[in-house]
Image (cartoon, rainbow, N blue to C red; front, top):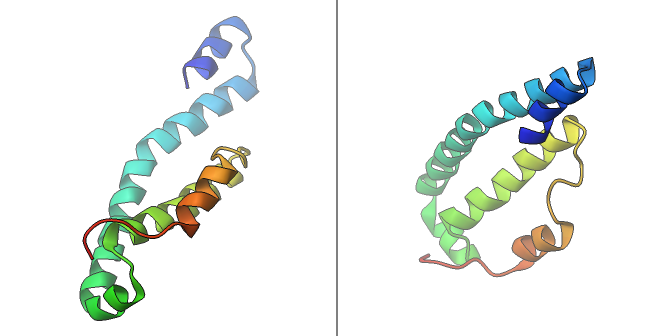
Length: 101
């Protein structure tokens, strides 16, 4: 975001303005989406906790994998498809969930 603000000052263009607008939009909407996803994960987990426990999934793992999907979709739509490190993302998805079950 700081780079885009500097670009507005030193190389003003519509692309710089759009980049700042996208950055600010993501900055303010991500916490809202995170809260929404967290509440949906909590509601679905409470609805049938035994199913998730027998599958070895906890709320933190479900939230993390859901947020990766949401963030990947948003960043791909805004032109940043490689925002996440692919190897780290795959490692997180394939690893065993940790924490209390």
